[in-house]
Amino acid sequence: AAGFATEGASFELNLEAIAALTPDVVLITDQFAALFDESAIEAVREIAELTVVPDQGSWQDRSRAVAAAVGLEGDGEDRIEAAELAIENLRSAVADRGLGGREVSTLRFAREQFISFVPPALCLEIMTEAGLAIPAAASGLTKEPAFPDYHAQAFVSAELLGDFDADLLVLAEAVPDDGDNVIAQPTLQGSRALDAGAVLRVPYFLWALNSAVGVNQICSDLTSGLDLLA
Image (cartoon, rainbow, N blue to C red; front, side):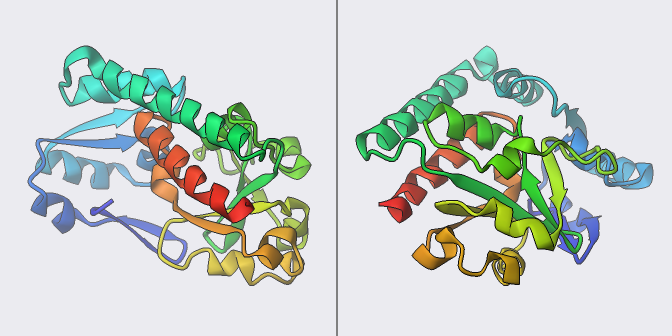
């Protein structure tokens, strides 16, 4: 995150910030690697060993790939077990509070456009497993073919944002206050989430990680968000 910056619709690698960390290994997912040209990738390789981690496959498999890349013993099985426990704890919290079936909508703003997480996004899989629901609009969307490097996300026009009304609105932010661009839209005014103040802001880059790190972040944030549904 220290070496990644967004400026409007562009994405840039901050090579000085990466070098300042003096890393032995730099990990980048293939969906983000696709955003940069080969010269930028080669510049990172001059700083440290670079491993591109695939976005495909289960979060468990990807966790093992990351663990292997950084030389963790056991290929991260302890982290996988901890993440699976986090999902179970979230499921129990939803059930204990009688919140099963409450709808959660996850949106973000990027490149002057609105984007929804759609199946099979990891966060939606976790929500469903925990007993929460997602709006029918998100269930019916498919990944935008013109934006293939972003796994399980799809464009949503501003006019359709009202279809993503839910009990809890999760705003995935790549930069601080990014979500303001979503909640300011006229089509969301009067929605259940906004009227109830049930808006949860979360770190996009961690929610987008299809690994144990992402699972733990998602479960932690959603557990906090349950307080907004009480």
